[in-house]
Image (cartoon, rainbow, N blue to C red):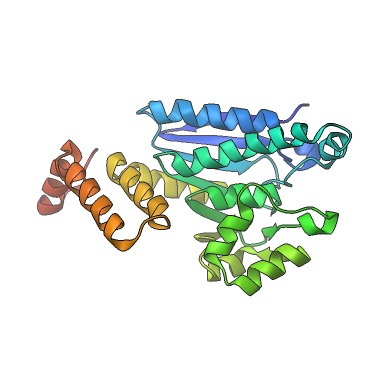
Length: 258
């Protein structure tokens, strides 16, 4: 069975499932393209308010397919460069997607699978889940933005250890460092992620989109630029219909419906 990205819906949450069980849900160009297309469709759909990315069966994602990588060594370098560009387009699409994206991790997130989880806005992982950047074990270097995400979130020495030795790190350890939001019981990561998504779905989509924009921009702005951006977002959201709904519900101690 070829690798595929399966798409299902639960209420207002789109569930994208990495499905390549023969290779522990290893990624490939078909998944990258399907991921970008799914997000493009979901962005335009008011019926979708959040996205959960998970893996089929007991694994989240083993990263790249080594058989495909070995075959690409016999091809011109442009072949692998094009493949990585597909992955990076998907990673960027997740970062820029204006709705919350949650990763539900069981088993292991390795290589580009780890990078994929880090690109999401929330990471919920089973207690026994393991995360690893094992590129250096095969004389390779990271892709998918993993080194970017880790270098901005963890001390340099720890990132160097994880990337150069290819050491595994547990969900609990990543939670202590702020990279995992919630540690689930084994087998429960997807259900917990869907519960988190349901809570997010009840909030004003325009406000969540602004928050995601501001977080993404923070690393590129100096304080003055960021204050200007906060002002613009705040004023725009204050005059959005949802602000009227939200403030009235807060004052009346009722539940808002956006």
